[in-house]
Each structure stands twice: as structure tokens, then as C-alpha cells.
Amino acid sequence: MGAMAVGLGLGAAASIYAGIQQKKEADIQANIAREESIAEAKKKGEEAEKFMESQELSYLKSGVMLEGSPLMVLADTSRKSLEEQRSIRRAGSAKAETLKRTGRAALISGLLGGGAGIAKGYAASTATKTPAAKQKAE
Image (cartoon, rainbow, N blue to C red; front, side):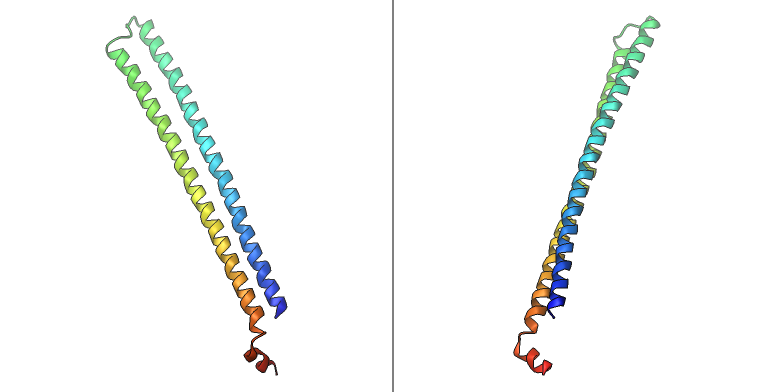
């Protein structure tokens, strides 16, 4: 019965370790998701900046002053770009939070599984020491 308790104890340790590793991996993936969304938002901002510069140049080459409607078009382009950048960053943050929650759930599951394994091991080791178990053995 002692070997069974040791086996259950090792199983418990493996469960806890797996939960810890899954949480670490989820945290890494969450950071990557957040960094990627920041980089993508920055890229979109740079693209919008180039597009607005091209719009301005087109207006000026056509002899159109940058006031009134053309200025409103440029302002609208800028506003839409900022909204898109915010949306990208929010989506990245949401994905990161989902990954972190998944990691926490895996950690808790590993800890609970490990605790259950330890309890089973303890119960198995003490069951052989009860008077009823001794009578069965005889």
C-alpha cells in the first residue's frame, strides 16, 4: 500500500507542476498578444499618417486649400485611424486577459488535482493502519 501512496503523491506533484507550467505559458502568450496588438496599432497609425500626407499633397497639387471640406476629410481620416488603433489595442488586451484567465484556471485545476492526489495518498496510507484493515489482512 505504501507504493500506491507514493504513486499518488507523484501524480499529485505532476498535476501541480503541470498547472504551474500551463500558467507560465499562458502568461507568456498573454504578453505576446498584448505586444503584437501594440505593434499592429502603431503600424496602422503610421499607415494612416502616410495616407493623410498623401491626401494633403493631392489637395495642394490640385490647388485646393486645406480648409473647410478638405480639412474635415483629413480630420475624419485621423479620427478613424485613432479609433482603429484603440480597437486593435483593446482586442489585444482582451485576448491577453482571456489567456491569463485560462492560465489561472489551469493553475487552480493543477493545485486542486494535486491536493486530491495527496488526500488519496494519505487516505490509502492510513487505511492500512486501521483495525479493520488489519483484520482483513489476517
